[in-house]
Image 1 (cartoon, one colour):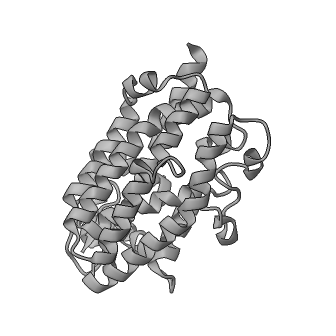
Image 2 (cartoon, rainbow, N blue to C red; image 1 turned 60 degrees about the horizontal axis):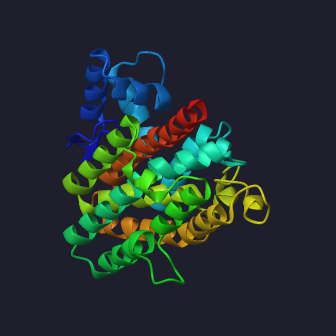
Length: 299
């Protein structure tokens, strides 16, 4: 079975014929998500179903790579390629407004993240997955006492260091683009197989994976010199350093578990489609951080 990477509708066939016909039909109906996916991944010109079928097969082909290698390649192409994502470019040497836009939108992402991890743990019957998600929830939201505050607490401290009280942060509603992405991730966590949900959420941790340069990325999530210079607050350094240190292990361990159980359960194609959908949602969400920064700059 395969899933549509634009809407997650499942298609049970031996190839990509059903999915190809679905894409053509949705594009003819001018559905924005499907047209966008086709334009960004297959072609900007109109294709017949047979050509869409062929190109979809190429998109999903592992070509001798492991599933984690395929996920990393797709993620790098989206965010760290020849034309890096605009937020990644802005974060290389970020302004205070960019960092505050990060804080105001990311607080919502982290709360949804923890809920997604909880759904994965609740729906899985595999002890290694449950242990992994419990540790992840503690790291992101619970913390381990005064010496090891959670990523969420570090984010709020970063906001305070930028002149924004945590009361203001917590009372700021998510922008519509962020809200749309969060709602979609919630549907993935509650409505797809737990292996798909795990892949969808933890593939996103690749954003701070400091070793992606070895695998073709053109730059880091941010310039590591930030951590030793004086361009940002100490609290900002603490938040960025935590993710920079943690997400290599977090993402690699998660993707190894995903590959193991996708192979065992026979749902690798489903996982691939769901990962592609999650990557596009993350693209939109990172743009929302910049949208928030622009609002702050104009206020």
